[in-house]
Image (cartoon, rainbow, N blue to C red; front, side):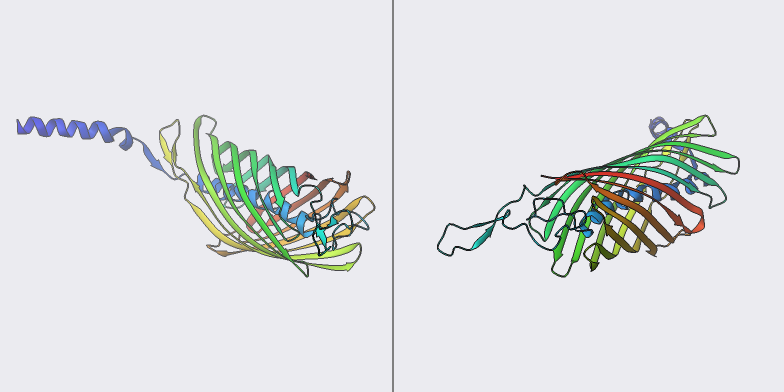
Length: 347
């Protein structure tokens, strides 16, 4: 009986672990090369394609709680509130001027960015075509304080090649962002955001091995801005931020029975940015330049340069349209071109 019991126990163990043991553990080099690129693609949700585009509106001084209009274009009074439109006499004995709401302080926005990227590092190539959107809301509690949230849907098509191996991938991302910003006199500004991105990739390797796997990314960002007015129609804003972020992809089993591994990636970087803005009769034009340096868990692509050229058009007193074109050059072969359209309104 003891022998029979041992035999049955052994059969149960084999039945339980057999399917797992039969899966080939693999760490295909193309997945490592691809995973590194995928990391930077997810990072866009927090870059100028995502949250940082919002900060650019505020560092250009578009919005004030006690102004009824978007402060964009030549002659916009960025430093003062509407008077007497946004003030009234209080009803008590002091007869003091009292601010009231100009509009509601609600900001609604919609962005879309087209992206073309490529990477020739690591002995292989990765090419990408994709788009990233942003839908968001911010509330101006005062001239100094703002808080908001947004979502960033993204979709890309990536093709990777390394040696005799090819990998074609369709990616689907959805990011969620919590944002807050505080300004104080002298045109100083602090901004923070927490971002969470859920990822899903459908892959086809060497034309016939398919797989689907997901993952998640987290980003925590803090940034300081200081704006200098050189004239009524020309200003410069300098910024310094630090971002901590990680990407945690899940392993998956493809249709060939191979269990692929893509390791977790986490890093921290500092970004120095400068934005030059010239007012026009109907809006503004601007140049934005930035450089990024990885300072925590550095990679072979630890430095980059970013440049964007753009302009905004004031559609009416409450709505503005922004368009820009730019790119990123990262060390060790990473390149990106992007074009962005933004529509923002205050109610």
